[in-house]
Length: 171
Image (cartoon, rainbow, N blue to C red):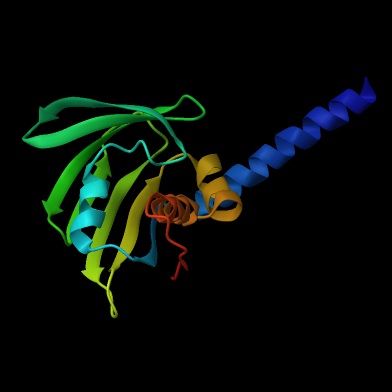
């Protein structure tokens, strides 16, 4: 019984420490990564605007009714979590801005895609995340365990697989 109390106390202490660290971290963060692809900016933009069936983390998706003139959709990840997104800006083939449109989550933010012709042909895409993490425990995990750029890097890798492209992800 004594061991059980010690283990439970240790877990409570650890969770409290993680929450305290998270409370000291800023709620907002800014992260960016870029990669080059051997396709034209128009082809890259078309894939970004199309269905996300090429992304490994997306189990299913669907289109929602527009709200305030903005395209909306949902994506369900491989863990079953559904997130609603909306298109904030589309300037083919050079700029795309999406936003999480679900206020019930412990995080929110925008992704800005900037697409430019690359030297020697092809395209370069930079993804910038301007995010907010509200839950202090998740904020701590996002900073020290997952990293702010892991989702961006996974997205860029999936895009590389889509175009059968070997790529280097840059800051």
